[in-house]
Length: 155
Image (cartoon, rainbow, N blue to C red; front, side, top):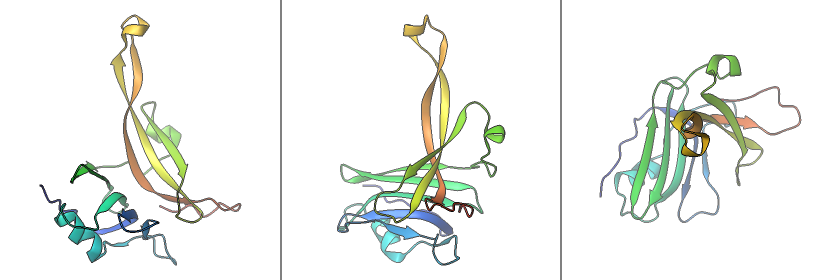
C-alpha cells in the first residue's frame, strides 16, 4: 500500500475520519482562513492500513494555489492533486471550459463547498461525432458562508 505525503503548508478544507460522525474543518475559523494539517490527518495518510482512516478530504492552499482531493477506496488512498488553481474565479476570468460550483456542506455548519468544474471537449457519437463538453475534474477552492448576509465570502 502506498503512503501519501501532502505538503506541510497551511490549508482550508476538511477531512472526515472513519470513526467520526462529522468532518473536521481546517481553517475557516475565528478569523484564520488557513491552518496547518493536524498530526492525526498526516499519520493516517502516511499509513493506509491505519484505523481509523481518512474517508475523504478536500484541501486548498490559497497561497500556493494548490488543491487536493482525497478518497479512501478499497484500502488505499486515491489522491488528486491540482496545481496552479486560478486565483480569479469570476466567470469572465475562467472562460468557457471552467465553471464555479457551490454545494451545501454536509455537517459543516453554515458553509458551502466551492469547486471549479473543469470541462473537456470530446467527440460524441450521438451528436454525429461533434465535440461536446464533458465533466473532466472538480477542484476544491474553499468555503463560502450560507448565511443571509453573504458579503464576507471566504477562501
